[in-house]
Image (cartoon, rainbow, N blue to C red; front, side, top):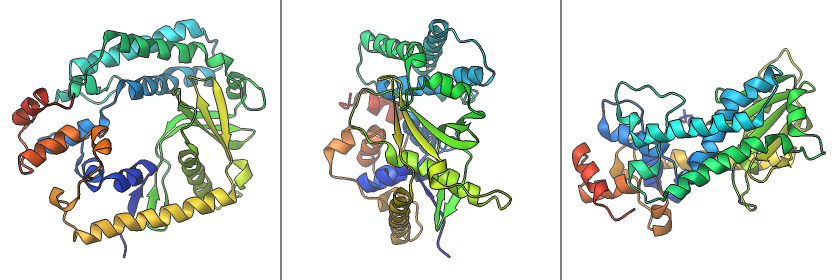
Length: 333
């Protein structure tokens, strides 16, 4: 029987880019502290650039503060809320700066944050941090000004929803030998039909997030099929919205039979790629069995660059003290 593969858009992209990177992120990394190498891989996997971090702060604030307030029909003071969001960011920044994630007594909570400027010493200016705080504040202040594609205010739309569930990560379905378990920023029920919302904090006008949203829609569609006491969803029942909090726009991505068919094919092919990789190494989860990319551009943006270089230099033997010294004197920053 073929092994069930945990499938995600990010893991498949990682596999295509570099087998070794896939190994670090999807096989080696673990939050446990008994094995220092595996723990370091976990920390590097969680490491963020400042650009990534500012978006994750807003995501967390919406999850913990704003969406619950909307659910309870609370009165919202967005100027005050924006200050709270910045305070959340400052708390996370201090946690990362103090390397709280290295303390065995610390549990992963809402303050958990690992920034590359602290973990591997990536250079930055204080103005870069202030810019992040400014964008976080602006994203919250501007939230009530965002409109849905039909002109209705996003805030009014959310207020009239039948239910709002932020940060959904426990929807699990299987499609052939692939297990789908996407992280969904918000699942809303509007007019008793499901709505997926994906928060973005980006200035880019060219990034295409449609496939990630379609994966979320497919997961909801398949979960409904498992409920024999309820009528299946039609494709048109499921709405997919990409909300760009920086640009103040909402873009709808169509969930259709054609989109699902295309995704089915992609999942089947890439699942087979992962299975072939694992079969080709005869079940041995050893680093030597995973090839390194020769694309220097990919290496320069990889979270695991310092660890990968260190292991290559030291014949895949890891020592925590030696690694930290290596990073301190590296030329990657």
